[in-house]
Every structure is written in structure tokens, then in C-alpha cells.
Image (cartoon, rainbow, N blue to C red; front, top):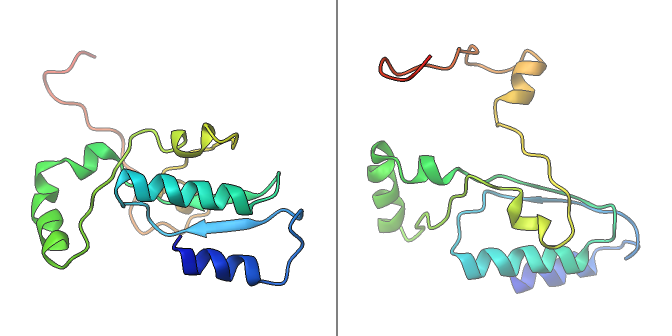
Length: 128
């Protein structure tokens, strides 16, 4: 959330003690910007508010098959700098509780996901 976005958020007609729902687009900024964004949302949110955000896993971000995409994003001036395999930890230290949901889970539950559910693949050398 930029400084101008924070000002706009404060200027919205609302009750500062009323619960708020905040939706943050995919978090892929560097750590200092990410922490600043979480701090601003926290400061502007009353107890009981809801924060929704998307984070791509660090494991996926660092996967070899993503390298070309990351390079392309960097070349276009929008580098992908962050990924975490523990997304709840981004806000739990600020007193928020978290519930982590796989992006496909609600779609499967409501019968609206375009990809069929697959059983987890097991590597042939992995223990059973």
C-alpha cells in the first residue's frame, strides 16, 4: 500500500473503530516494502478486521521452471522479489490470526475450479 493509497484509505467515509475488510494484491515486493504495507494495513484496521492477500510460495518462486518468468518480470521492471511457504507469519506477529487456503481449494469445494483434483504424485523412490 503506497503512501497515497494510505491517504485514500483514511479519506474514505468510515468509522475508524468499525471492522474493515482489506484486499491486498499479490505480495511479491522486497521485505522492507512488504513489512511497511502490513504495518500500514494494521495501523488502519480496527480489531476484528479481515485481511485477504495472495502470496506465492517460496518453493514455487525458486523452482527452475519459473526462472524465465522471473527474468522476464525483472526485465520489465517488476521483479518478483518475495515468496514464502509460511504466509500466515506475515501478519501473526502483529496480532492477526491467519487461515491459509490453497488457491484451488474454494473452487473445488464449490465445484467451480477448472482443473480436476489430482492425487498427490509420489516420486518412485519415495518411501510409502
